[in-house]
Image 1: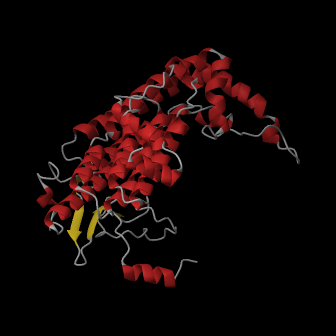
Image 2 (image 1 turned 90 degrees about the horizontal axis):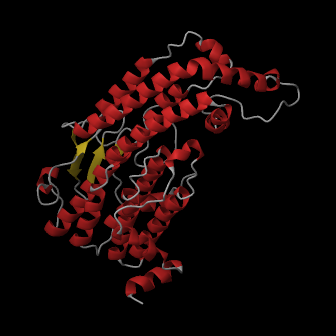
Image 3 (image 1 turned 135 degrees about the vertical axis):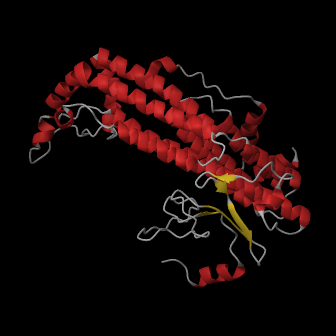
Length: 406
């Protein structure tokens, strides 16, 4: 047994990370999905896939505690490899799982950068792994597939009651369509619950014979807007993706609801897939952009560590990292300008994105005025700026211990 294997066993009692690391030797992950099943397609592999990322995260941190940054780097690369090699699976839920797995990989990478015995070669490997992440292209492929699925679902639902139930039943139970998930009237009698079945039958008949056609058009238009926006982002030389995202959401809002019987249909709780696409799907693009920003900050933080190891100090500007540690300074997708950075007198540095509000608050990680929360996540949606966290100083640790949060 090698030292690497022994440390994994000592830490976790199992050598399972070695199995997961084999993903780095494969060009792709193929779970033999039958896309023709549409809404009936089962995806039992997604939960284990995400758990694998969580296990690799724990293994990487364990490796660092054992003084083995090389093993930690391999486990971080395996986490990123799971995401990259599953990218061909063009399903919305699969894409969301990949985003979640990418987010999981941030924490052990931060821990990795705090190691005192890490080498430049190990850092370079992790940096390359992050640079190869391509969530925007992943999102585009996903929405192209979802567009085809959405049209097929509408056509099948229009053709038969069974297909309608298969498509809209699960969505109604999740509250996506605004329907009730109750099984029957309670006490006192609820008139809406008592008439729900009759209203649903009327709604289905009217949707299949009338509103489904205008909804099909709006769904197509909404999907096309998202796909075109993602393509624009990938060819945008300024890389100011927030502007592209804002233009996308404004365009989708301009579609509106044109059906003359909208109020009547809503009263009957007729499904409105286009509203779902306009709201829920645009938020998926936002999540992808958030992780794209995180990836660029991570790459920059790794490059700063490499510079510090080689020169014994931090650079005065990010331009000093070019071209030795990356080809060009990463652009903040929320601003269309390079990420903000400056070294501190205590040997730390300030590195941040301006966040989703697009306003540079000078590296202030506090929540915006009026927002109350206790989340310490550095990419909090309500944070003024997304500041890459620095290790706590001895004084900060002492203050925390003397004034623990209530």
